[in-house]
Image 1 (cartoon, one colour):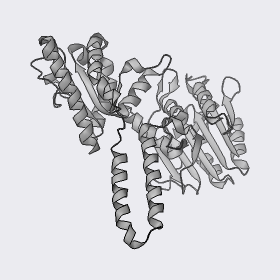
Image 2 (image 1 turned 180 degrees about the vertical axis):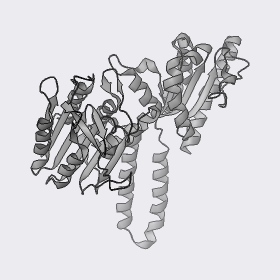
Image 3 (image 1 turned 180 degrees about the horizontal axis):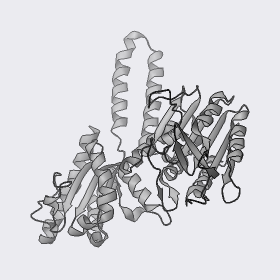
Image 4 (image 1 turned 90 degrees about the vertical axis):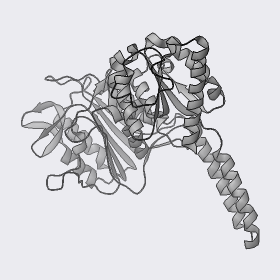
Length: 426
C-alpha cells in the first residue's frame, strides 16, 4: 500500500503565501492515479483554507503517516520554514517565536523508526536542504536508515521561489510525474525526477537537494510507455536487438560465432544511425517575428527528415506556465539560434532569463549557440555574445542584403545546424 500526506499552507497571519495550496492540489491530482486511471497513492491533502494546521495537528498527521507498515509513505510540504538555532522547522499556522512548528529532526526521527518499507520526503520551502543533517555531524552529512529518500527545493539557506501562483520546484515536480521524467517503460523514479528538476533549475538561484539511502530508485508513478521520446524508443529497439543476438550467440559452437559477431556489429550500427530528432531552440524578439517564420521555412526539410525539432515560444500552449515551458525547452535543446537585433539585446526577459540558461548550457558543452545577425546592433560589443561565431558577418546584417543574399545565408544556417548535430552524434 502507498500512502501520501500532502500539506499546503498559504494562510499565515503574519506572512501569507499564494501558491502552496495550489501546489498540494496539483501534486494530489498527479500522484493519486497512474496514467491509465489505476490507483497509485492513497492521498490525504491538508490545506490551510479548510483546516487550521497547528503544531499538534501536523504532528498527529505525520505520526499517523509513518506509524503503520506500508510499502511507501510520502510526505510533501509547501509553506514557510524557519531555521532557529540548531534545527529547521516546518512552520505551522499557530507558530510562535519559541515554537515555530515541527522540527526537521523530528520528521527524520519518525521516518527512521517507521516500519514503512520506503519513505519519500518532498519539501518545497526555505532551507529545506538541511533536513537529515544534525548539529553533531559535518555540514554535508545526514543520518538516514535504508529505504529513505529526500528531495528538496533548495539547499541550506536558499529560498524556494514562487512563479505565477505556484512554486517553481513543485511545478517541475508535477511535470516530471506527468511523464516528462519517465523512462522508456513509463516509470518515473525519484532519481529521474531529481535529474529532471536539477537541469531545469540551472538558471535559478535555488538548487534542488537529493539525499537517499536506497538500493534502487523507487518509481513514484507509472506513465504511458508510448509517451516517451524517440530516443527512448530507439534505446528499446537496440536492447531488443542485442538480446536477440546474444541469445543466438549462446546457441552456437565456437567456430560459428565469428559471422554472428559481424552481423551483431552491423545491426547495432544500423540502429544507431536511425535519426533521433534533436531540439533546436530559437530565441528572438517578437518585433522580429517575420524572420523567425522565414528561418523555420529553411529548417523544415530537417524537421521532415526527423533530424530536428524546432522550438520557439509559438509552441507554448494556452494556459500553460510559459516561463517554465521556455526554460524546459532550453534545457533539452542541442542548438540555440539567436536572432540578433537591437530589440533582441534590449529585451529584459531574454537578457535575464533565457540567456543565462543558454550560456550555462553552452559552457557545459550541452548546447551550441548560433547567432544570426538580422539588423545593426551592439552585438560585437556584447561581452556575453560577441565570442560566439555568427552565421553571417556582423558587419553585413541580413536587412542590408538583397533577398537572394538573405536566402543564401539562411541556407548556410540550415546546413550549419545539420553539421553541428551530425558532429555531435559522431
